[in-house]
Image 1 (cartoon, rainbow, N blue to C red):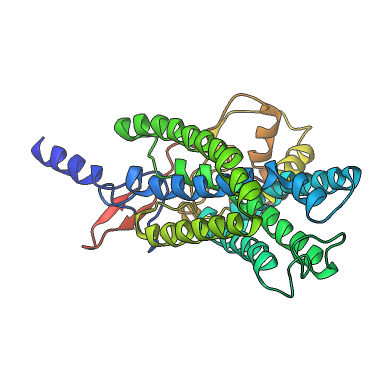
Image 2: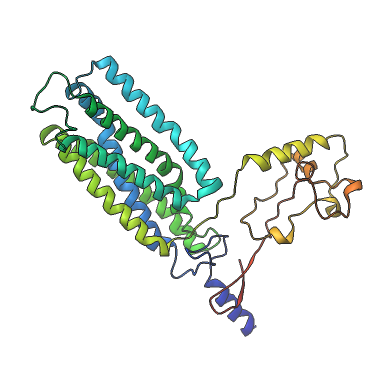
Length: 342
């Protein structure tokens, strides 16, 4: 009994949710995740939302007052920018889940976002990029318009990586199977909403006030500095994070299941476990599996092994898919070379 309790206490030291630390090892519970990691995520989310709301709220004013567009053209340009900003998270989320992972996607998006803010600031301070040489002019320079819209769309592309990944990355820092961390995860989402509301309040009040009463250049400079500081802080927190490995293109296995089920649609369904294909042991370390459900049971035919293929080791994935199980585990080693089940 004492040996069992000791083994359980040692097992408790590690996080068993298929996440890894920044070196690709099983994460230590005491030194990774939870608030020590999620605070970095909340900080960069706060700065991004302050920036976005501050720019979006007053964008029509800039287009009409500084670039001297008519109201119809200004509204059209704002709608184009807003639409692009809305669509980009679909692309960013797909790339993050399939190829880059959430941390890398957030980091790359941060650099694109910062580049956009830097261009926006330079367009207000560099003489050759300013709207014109004098304080008031009937028509701004073409180069200023080009740089301004390039900056806006860099910010839009940056948002495409932030919105689908940041909140999920913050949630990844909490282990759902650990009672205490599960409670803290609920608090994390409360603080997430608080940070967003506070960012909205500051964006539409303080930032807009600086734009209208001081200058657009000063407002852009302050937002650029804030974003740069939070990006550096986010990167420095990398040793505290828990990471999820990207799962590859999700559409290919979905299509394989559908095609395999259609090919075997005439077979009588059976629940004989000996004739249902399970995930090979060699692939048992690629990540978490979804729980098998009783819904859409016709798709379970994709996992039925046809009699002529019984005993074969290599299977065509377009004819045979695997049954998911919740008992999936992976074996890794800690720093002392001791095997850990995760």
